[in-house]
Image (cartoon, rainbow, N blue to C red; front, side, top):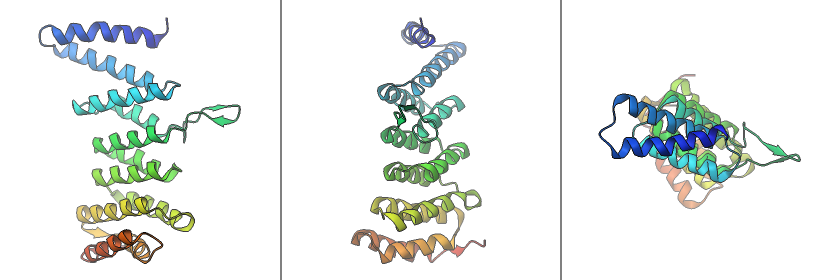
Length: 229
């Protein structure tokens, strides 16, 4: 019997015993959490997409209960890099490129709110090739609101500039605008490179609504001092 199957059996035997009996002790609660984290880790590293989706469901449940442990974050980091840094190939073809998995992982990382989660999301912005993944990573970075040494805005500026040259993306541009406003509000200043990017978005080529949003953002951002480089 595989280790994963043994863990699953232990989980389904132990959890009901804890859940339907008297109130759990600290030791029982710790054991249940440890078993859950082991299952999540094994599922996150499983071969099938369906297994990873179940892992994400368990992660979401764990976060809702306040479990933002390093073990949960580590599993999220693995899923966030699935098909990008953690690559599996078969006959030369990548078999684990699942953008929807990475999108959900990015969303949950935004709920952590920690510097470690921020660092993973910045890596996603810089390394991923899927606009929907990058956009969710930026949204989550906006939620966290950490921009130490301008690292977060720098990554966003670099990626949006890249898409500006190759294939402008309306949703990605909107996410960047909202991120810049959030960081300006938190930090009290704004990177002049971010303002320059918003100006270029306002000029196009983007949808009219995106250009209008950029112009509105310029009115907001001009109220902040420039950060000195």
